Image (tube, rainbow, N blue to C red; front, side, top):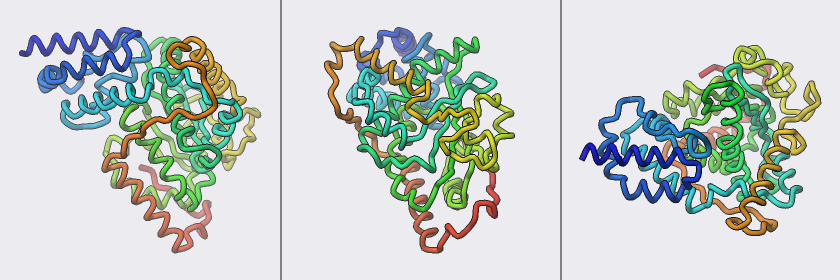
Length: 362
């Protein structure tokens, strides 16, 4: 049985190394050999990634079993089940071709970029892509939920298929993770209405794109974040806590230890700059007109042309993607944040000024 199981592992690994292997091919193989793989995996050492390192994207970073194991410190059989759920989700929602389905017309995509603030600002000194997120000023209020989920998944897929491979080539080593700088400027009690959207996005990431972020840097944190962080922090797994660094003010000095000035998000280049569209160099990384977003959108239009047989002519409208229900941990965190925001609203929490609050690190 051991020899047969090991052969199944090798076949699965070989499939992952083939760029033409779709999620459906992997899912069918995985389902057929699940018991063999589970039995063999029970004797894996702590670092089992050697079995699942593929040569190239897109399947390499998306389907490394080691990432699912690290994301869920549990039995190997549980991480394999999560991997199978991920493959099934990709097949059912045609994630393999989601980059061939650009959001049309471009005016809608522009609106999404104005209300879901995210951008690529450069690379760390170790070569990891640096993403900026305007959490506090993202309103998610100018398009349907489906549009925002679609855009977020497309951003993830573009990162895995294009950005990370390009970074690996640029820096001459394999790069599988990114850094995220989360700007909390503008975070208010009204964020209660945004929790559902944020929970959906984080659930997609947790279940289908685990271990893609090396470190989360929290900057420009107001009182409302400090209050929520104190009640949420105890609920997080230790591995997650270690990934989150709450920095003082804009965090510029700390961030310059891991990235050059040119890669700093615009809201970190001076104290109190916030997420304003006015940056020191005049470039807003969130904007639809930023080179990163132009490259992403043009890439999707190119993929649409190359995959006409699969996707057909695109019309205006969003792509519906099923979002899995959040796990118990994610659901508890969301409910805890809601409760704390409601408590703050009742106690007039916004009366506290930012300058008087001392943010505690993780």
